[in-house]
Length: 93
Image (cartoon, rainbow, N blue to C red; front, side, top):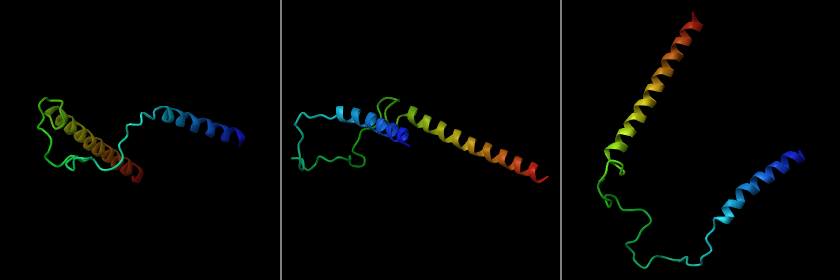
């Protein structure tokens, strides 16, 4: 039990130290609402720009990658279901 506790405390301290060192204490943090009310954290719908290069968000490369991932997931699901049906048929026979 003491070894486990020591290991848990050691691991936790390893996780806290980088987080503590990464803090920025420059002191230029503004607290309160922004001066311009049009500034928001989340962009408004359709406020962005159209993709200019193939790698931009919404460009053809990203959409093609999305299609490949979706097709691969559907294919994996169908193959797993087919194998499960075969295994069930063998075990029932």
